[in-house]
Amino acid sequence: MAKQTNMERKKHRTKFRRKYKLSIVDENNFATIFSFRLSIMNVFTVLSALAIILIFIVYLVIAYTPLKEYIIPNYPVMEEREKIEHNAELVDSLEYQMKLYSQKMQILHTILNGEDPSGYDKLDSIVVSPTESYANLNFDLSPADSLLRMEIQEHEALNVNFQTPKSGLRIENLFFYPPVYGVVSSDFSNGHFGTDVVAAENSIIHAVLDGTVILDSWTVETGYTIMIQHSNDFISVYKHNAKLLKKTGDRVIAGEGIALLGNTGNLTLGPHLHFELWHEGKPVNSENYIVY
Image 1: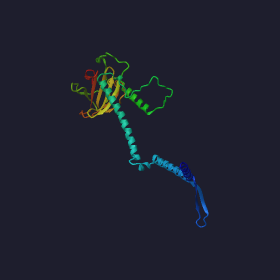
Image 2: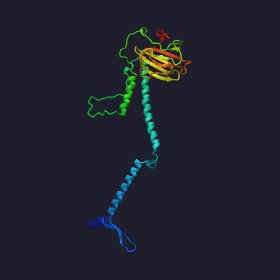
Image 3: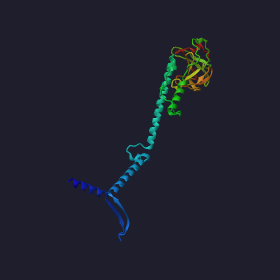
Image 4: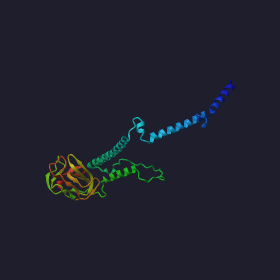
């Protein structure tokens, strides 16, 4: 029985490898025009190779040509993909700008409270391990490096610590340069933390002391507004300007032009400067130290 089974298997393998002749003959004289030999194994091998090649070609067509937009269901077209990538870049940029804006506001709040902003942490921190190998460092600029440089520049622009602070100096001993010469229309009071000075429109507004611009902005109420941090915990504020001549981070000296007098914002009835002077986080009456 076992011998018969072996013989059947041998016969089956022989049949699988048996050669066949495929011929093309002339119908009129039965002359052979073309012929070649083949077997079942050869046919199977050729068909398998053709199937693999066909699958590979279909993959290339789908992966690297626009036909995938029509073959793959719900695949986004080229315009939609470009919009998705553009929106992702905008969201990332907006998130970064919001972080910078939040940081600026916190620094400004720290300054207005009379606190020292020099210890304020940056948005990101870089931790370098002491055991880190520096043999394969890549010194090419990367997007992350560019963002870090931008962040440091923004942080240093708002670094208002002065190298030689005059601790203990009395406010009466300081010389304040008049921001503008004109007529005082509204004095300092409990409900009005500044002095309104009426002057010709587009008159130059001057910095009262040396310092660093910590805010250049526009609001609905006060229009174009600029704020300067000075030494000895002084901050000066200039509102309702027609145009700002300085931007955040600029260093200015006493008497330097920083803006043009105007009438911007809702809380104004005509061209004038609303000037505020703050010391150690509290508003002070500038008319005690400045002659307008």
